[in-house]
Image (cartoon, rainbow, N blue to C red):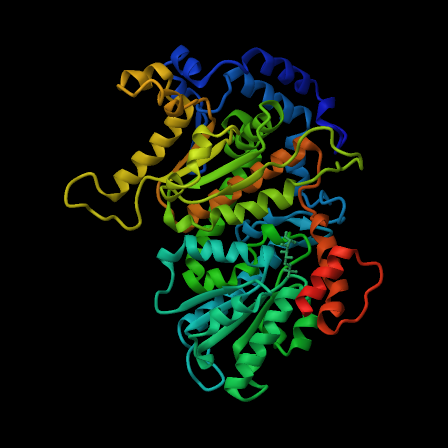
Length: 545
Ligand code: G6Q
């Protein structure tokens, strides 16, 4: 294996790719497609129930060969093995990275430091299932004897984005006679609006926090406690209306939550990789244990595909390598994620954390500053809505933004129109048309041939040559959601390995937290805090009035 965390420039393939981009970088997607009538199927792969068309990336088969060589030279296969064996590949936090163990089937084993972590995982899953069933069946009663109808998840970052994304994505499969809310922001409005119409007697709070010390979550949890006690009138109510998902049993107990109703996980589960751990309790409450297990099976299927498929057939590895190509060799700096599926409306927000908290790094594992670009900005919105807002910039702006389009063959809510085509036909026509318009554009001659006035022609020219992937799946079900999330997880991992960075730490979020704590006394009672800058002092004074 390569020495870990060195510069990717040390890999011979890096120089070859640098030469290669000089050779093919000027060729347009129009020219690539004109030269090869089969390109649309030649540069496409299928695996783990997903189809990836990357023919509209600015690559040739040689590019892919060189990128795969780069993956080999960076030791990607060994890294996958190191992750799966529990090595501490999260170097700066000295932790194993074992989210793949969260979805290994019951009966398999993964020994880490003499402990079978898969057995531990299934113990928690069984505990979650028993609890979820008792709430869903109405056996779990609130303090006044009423069944639970409302679930409020309190958590932030990885303890919020996954649960809320999964709830929205799988809403079709969820209990419609129950209400699910998610509170994350320390802004009191988030909590106030979440509970404004809820009956405390029928409400269960799931306090989700790996550390059980996160300021926002603990502030919201204490407000929830006060809200519930004011309505239920007794401290005893806490045990019936609060459960915890955490690794910190002491803090959970001192909050007043019965640790029998605590669902645990382990330090080898990173926050942004935790939606399939006990952090998914609200998801399981919404869709039931069977659907949750189907989601885990989808994750596992993609894990196995990523770990074993040759690079050229490996969807997450190809997606990761194509991101490296776009970022480092074509100079792009952002990726738009554009799901043509309304239920995936929170998927781009989820991916923002997964991708940017993982790969937004400037220091390599060898402790040196990077000498290549690293993580791109990820963002997006569901189609077709985005088409009527920001797509203008993707089509004609001065910045090239590679896009990931996603669509599903079968709609969950088929709506036949009075005349064909129906809603879904129109949706899919749009997604396919968008990637073609981005790739092929429209020349001045084509615009002029439509009779457009000559002075308007330049404004109507579509430059084209804008790269995209299209991912197609059969239907958005729990299994496919698991596959999709794992697809991006392993793509992120691939990029991190190529760049030689630690994709599993997040030191960049610490400084702001520390500074917020430091300035708080000044805001609360005007206590002077030494060493503050003049802008901070003036803003605090303006707040205090
Ligand atoms: C994710 C990060 C971060 C974390 C939140 C919440 O990878 O670690 O987003 O999930 O800060 O942390 P707790 O679960 O400990 O409250």
